[in-house]
Image (cartoon, rainbow, N blue to C red; front, side, top):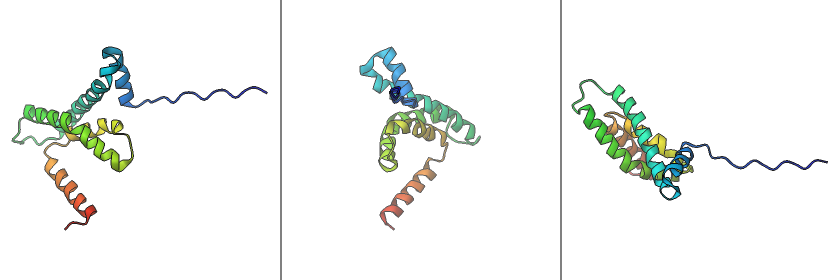
Length: 130
């Protein structure tokens, strides 16, 4: 009777794992985890920026370059904390949420106030605050 073949190794094919492998090859394993995370955030920011600029009103008071700069600063500064916060509720790894969170931050042109109000009202409803 032939022996059963060994199980293949688990392969992580997420975007973060691919960015981590590429960054590890270029910058070494010590810096790879940081470079990969922010490379993924910048990639998602650019994609979200393109969607956000396309969806913006033509009569918006904020110039496009200022919108791009603001979304870049917010993406770099807030993607990781938001992804970590969401991962505690969703039960997923926060590294898997980096790409969609950064994309959505940049893709919501002039809708941040409405999104913030919705999140605040939802949080108050969950906590039972009137």
